[in-house]
Structure formats: structure tokens, C-alpha cells
Image 1 (cartoon, rainbow, N blue to C red):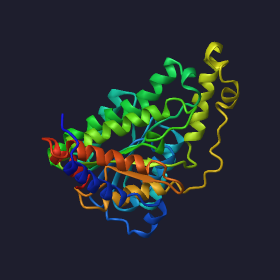
Image 2 (spheres, helix red, strand yellow):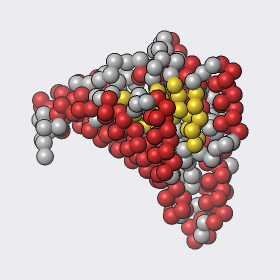
Image 3 (cartoon, rainbow, N blue to C red):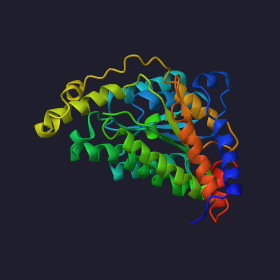
Image 4 (cartoon, helix red, strand yellow):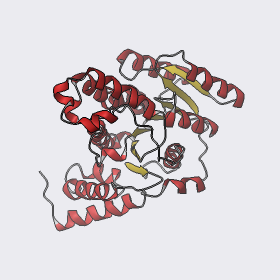
Length: 331
């Protein structure tokens, strides 16, 4: 395997500088003109609420054709979004898609590609869940659901859209991760574990897609007041109700609070996330960052992102993988 030398470390330092240039406060995005997305086709998962719903509206208002997907349609959230599209003359098309179901992923991607007559321009992997509580308390049902949704769901969608993107030698994939994909907080179930997996999977994918001129950006949001808190409470309460007392008894205070989080104290604007993605799409392909922290407050993972980029370039930058590594880290 490649060794770390003075020359490779210097190359890694250059990667750190490139990465640091992207780590800006989310509020700065409000000052950047939105690019014209006319002619672009974008598929977004998890559009019933939160970042997905906001992104669907934001991208459509910039001229894009948006395939806004959500599970269990028809549902009120789908009707509401379609009515908004009619009222504002936006090109938003709602598709049924549960990221847990292979056939629904295949059908949604095929439907979108059939409607536009080609591959998609952008995928936003956004649908995800959280289940709180100690790791010991997470049973296999909760563990499988968390990983199947947050990790395998993203993988299913990436595999679904990539043949069409590769055929056109262009495209961009966003993976909505979290600050907790680089740092962790106790008692948050497997949320960090799933987001750490997303970070690894999509950085690797970024390297592998360089020859195909397809970009990847992992978005790392801080805490935002979205619908995820309601869903998290439901899943966490269900886990608490069925969990074995043998595991619950070790964490009485933590268990008592499972299913009661309300997201209070989080006042950041969830529109920060769509604005950040828009800013990335406004950048020249090949210069877009592989990671973009977005937060109205602290960004605790900055140093981790910097040392990770520096290490990757320092370790592999002068190897046979060097062109892929350097392209992703803008060295």
C-alpha cells in the first residue's frame, strides 16, 4: 500500500485548503444567486416533509423538473405538493417510492427516465429515519430498519440512477448525511453508525465516478426543526414498548425519555439545506465539494473532514488511484 511521505503530506495539505474553502455558514447561501435549473431533471427522496419537501419546491422554482418521491401515496402530503405545483405552475411530479422496496425504486427511476426520455441530472438521497436510545436497547428490528432505510436505501437509489447518468457522462448525486456522520452523541441509537456508513459509501462512490464525470456531495446538516422528530418519536416509542426489560433496566433515565424528543431549541432555517445544494449545483462540475457541512450553529466535524481529506490525498495521491483522489478533493 502507498506510504505517507513529505511530498504526499504536502499534497494532502492542499486538499485541506480546498475543503476548508467550502465550510461556510449556511446563512451565506442566501446571498448567492440561484442558478437556472431549466432543463434539469432532479429526483428527490423523502419529499413528504422536511428537507425533501423544501428542496422539491426550491429546485422547481429555479426551473427544474422535479420528481418528488414519497412512500405510501396517495397521501395528503402528496396532494398538497401537487396543488402547490398547480398554483405556482411548477414542474413537480410526485412518484410513489419507498426506499426499502427494490421494485418501487426501480419503478420510480424508470418512470422518471421515461417521462424525460433520458437519464436524470441530479439525485438527492434524503429519506431517512432516526431511532433513539442506547445501542444495547436497539433490537434487530430497529437495527435492520435503520440500516435498510438510511444506508441501503441510498445505495438502491444510487444504483438505480447511475446507468442513466453514465450513459450521458454527467450527473450529480447528493447524499444527505449529518454532523453525526462524523461525530457522535451518546444514546442516539444507530443514527451515527448509519450516517458514518453513508459518508464512507459516497466518498468511495465519488472516487469511482470521476471517470464518468459524475459528482457526489455529502451534505452534513446540523440540528434542524423538521418532521424527523415526530417520526423519530414514533419509532423510538415502538422500540421501547417491545424491548426486553433485561436491556432497558441498565439505562432507566435515558429510556424514560425515549419517544419524547421535540426538537426544541433548534431555530435554524431548514431552507439552509436546499440553498446549500443549489450552491453546489451552481458550481462548475469537477469543482464541487465531496462534503459540505451546513449548519446555523457549530460545525464540530470541520477538523475531521480536513484530516480525512489530507490523509486520503497523502496516502493515495501519488498512487495509481491518485487522479481519482485528487479530482475529488480538488487538488
